[in-house]
Length: 408
Ligand SMILES: *Cc1c(COP(=O)(O)O)cnc(C)c1O
Image (cartoon, rainbow, N blue to C red; front, side, top):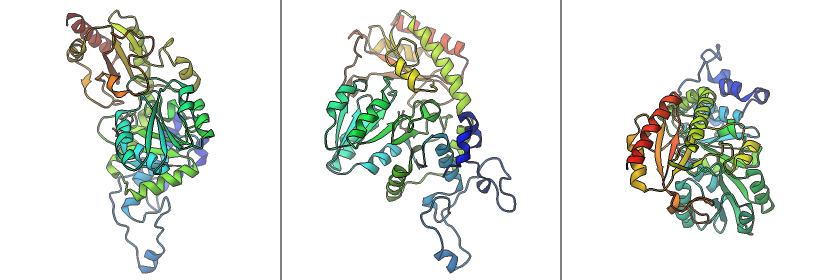
């Protein structure tokens, strides 16, 4: 459980203090004697005698009982994430972001239920809807992320949960989460938000209407491209459901990964600030380039969704996409291959910049690609994850990439 006194602190300060309970950062008689919760590698709790074993607390947070319930290193990470999420009672940890999405959806959906999923959702979320959930008798229906009326029309008596992702991590459409959540609530449906893009510093999800907020900690929290983890945070009702489901599925994360994630968390605020400023500068510059048809970023003034973004978000990140003016996938690939500072690879949110191709056409069923208002010839894009390099160096790299696109 998070320390309520932390609610008074600003998020930047909470990033420093969260999860560092004295009993997790030292042992009697010197609690709090080290800065970071040590890595507790432990499966087994040893009891002094049979009576103590019988009095063990098998299923209470914060009591070491058996390794699958975690140990102080994992508790410290969960506690820190709870402290950063206004309105959260608790956080469950998962071995990946996808496992967190599965953990949240399986906590609230049962056979016969309908899940409404935003059409810009992360591809493995779509695959989960078509595969695992379908096999369990749960029907997934997709809706246009920016069409609130279509969303309302898509709800029905069997709608039990909604999966939102705002902005979508490929095409970056922002959703009106408070409005969609209000509609979902009239249907008694649980609102699950994949909040990996903004995280709690940029979008206080539970305050904006989500019931469960999910993150891939692999991205901004880890921040160094060296771990896989996920989380789901919620208020009291849903935290209980998340916990029961995660325990039933045997979910547990390694203390080493939890420790790395705690280390990443401490610097997440300054990293995000730097990455957001660089991304905005590069997005503004790209929007002026003749090779670029559309920059996809709600942070960019004048972009679709910018009004909702300024209304609802308190911060951004370094992830955005852009679409080339005409040409083909080959020219786009020439752009990618000409880059020197951007690594070519999946994932994002690390300290190093990355680029990936964006071809969402085959990934949408309820909304158009290219987006409304775009020329149908402008279909090939890239996604950039802006890291901590100097933005001038990144811009010079992008100039070289655009030259290769022009030559292709
Ligand atoms: C990466 C990602 C995930 C999945 O996270 P993993 O840790 O890679 O399993 C989920 N949602 C979004 C938006 C992502 O970008």
